[in-house]
Image (cartoon, rainbow, N blue to C red; front, side, top):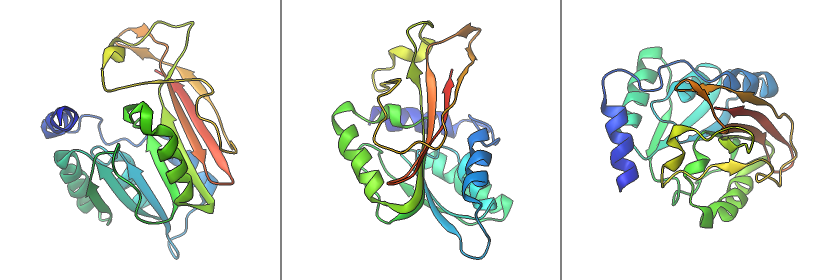
Length: 210
């Protein structure tokens, strides 16, 4: 339960820990799938945090379900959605044990899968694909270690196990990109690998190196 307490502590603080600005990959996803207001695409956001991406995607034509381990984060998500005049569903669950209950057009992971235990990753990836429509997309963003850059200060987090380039396989990639960013004043070897993937089509949406 250590992880839950940590995220509850962050999300209970005043304001929004990650602010309310959606990640740029959200706009890329919209360009790829072009959702309509008539027949909304079902999207699930496991690890939605305080809802910055979930709310934005709900505003742009998706039927959104946000999942997070933190009750405080989900409360902020619901409040933010109400303030923006959109509806979405929230589910409190631990990513390591939570399994999708429906079939989705989009399964949307942004910087959460590094918290998935190593021994369940293969089974979970198979499960996510099975719960994605054949025409759907899995968008995956993870931090990726790079040997030519120093590790980020938070690398010693015992729960967080970052990836290496090439570890996320088994999807047809529609897009892949990498960025190097500064963390607390220094470059790091952490890549945030964002993928849009599906059972038959996929997008390695954008690998961001933090």
